[in-house]
Image (cartoon, rainbow, N blue to C red; front, side):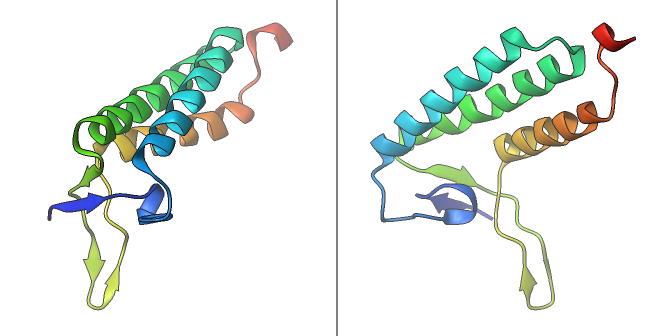
Length: 111
């Protein structure tokens, strides 16, 4: 299914915030996450931050080119619909899951 998402995750703030502000916020977040990636000591954290950055840049490019993000994956069961998303959202989610897992892995410094 093809959906134009003018907001942030799950269409929040759609029509309330300009796409330029969302692009600025996205770039700011990418810069911050890039800094976290550089200073991280754990390999899994660095990889997780990289995956998040790739997903975020993809959404930023989509928003810059189209003024919206194209969401095309939609799951539903009977009348329950999960909000639509795209591959970039999957990358961001995988990166966050990797960060959560990294909390439970001892860093190389603590071995």
